[in-house]
Length: 132
Image 1 (cartoon, one colour):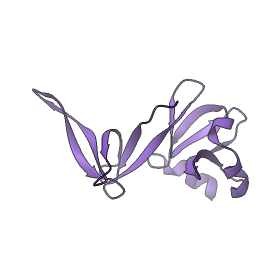
Image 2 (image 1 turned 30 degrees about the vertical axis):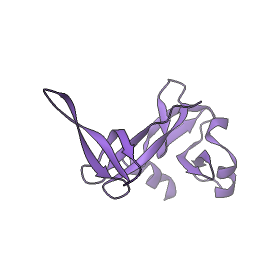
Image 3 (image 1 turned 45 degrees about the vertical axis):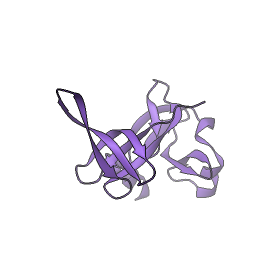
Image 4 (image 1 turned 90 degrees about the horizontal axis):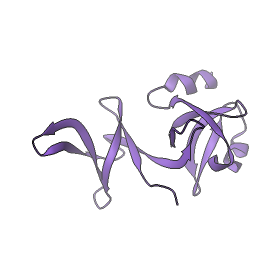
């Protein structure tokens, strides 16, 4: 069984942050602020999909053991590059420069992920370069 965890891209601050907890009843997530007081770490609430964009851990890792999340841009052991996406109950690799129908046929777990190149928020130039 894979570990369930999330990270979030903060739209205003332009940083990737770990998600501490997610309150589904009001779509609020709590993110560690990086500050602390005498009681320990401080957490701040944010609204998902407006203030932050939430991405789920896929359960897969690179060959070096780095965790792979939705939105990551990765390279496979065969030298192919693409973006990790989620659709129809499956994490898949949307390969750069390939037919979209082919991409969705290959679940991420069927690939050997060599390394992470970045992600679509911190490194948009990686995906933009492929599309131009």
